[in-house]
Amino acid sequence: MTEATQAKRGDLVVVHTQSRDWVNDAPGRGHTQVSEQFAMGVVTSVTRDGQVKLWREAGELDGQRDHLGRPDRGRALPAVGFQKAWIMSAAQIDVPGALASAAVHTWDGHPTRVKAFGSLDEARAAVRPHLFQSPGWEALHVAAVARLEAQRAAWAHFLKTRTSDRQDPAFGIYQACVAAANDAYRAARTAAGTGSRPPAA
Image 1 (tube, rainbow, N blue to C red):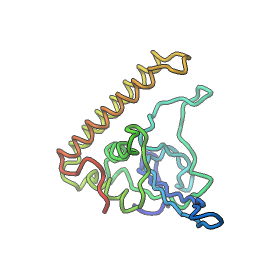
Image 2: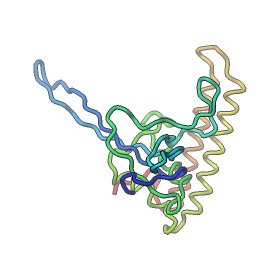
Image 3: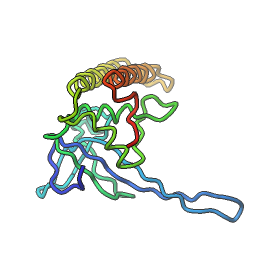
Image 4: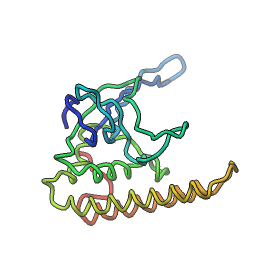
């Protein structure tokens, strides 16, 4: 991955942000804690000079529509805490596979909530098996496509069955289906010898 210079639509992007939180050590004492996040996604639009204009984070479905019913083309780079956008060309890596590995990197206790990586090295380790030069990337691509199709089918079912009830069980069913698809993909990663979760470098 390199710092964004000439991105293209469909390239893999890792968006580096930084946040600062005040931590109270004791009454009247505390310190600033800096957190680094590296969120992975795909470039969906670029400027004329090849800079990332819009991107879609791993785990988010393409083909969605925004609140006005227009095609959702992605989001802009963060306005707060943004550090860098790191790019890997789609000519070098299987982007669907890399996105699947990022999508199954979830928070403990939240099997469908994607967790950003804690370092660039951790993000690199997650995508390394998807490089076209890495053995077994084809099998991971097939598993990634299956995971995505399962998520799309679950979302389509949710849209057909949801109600206005705040306790609507349809979303819980959607989450359960995505969690099962994530588990199936993790099993495929394990079978390919890359581990159930992206390892740290």
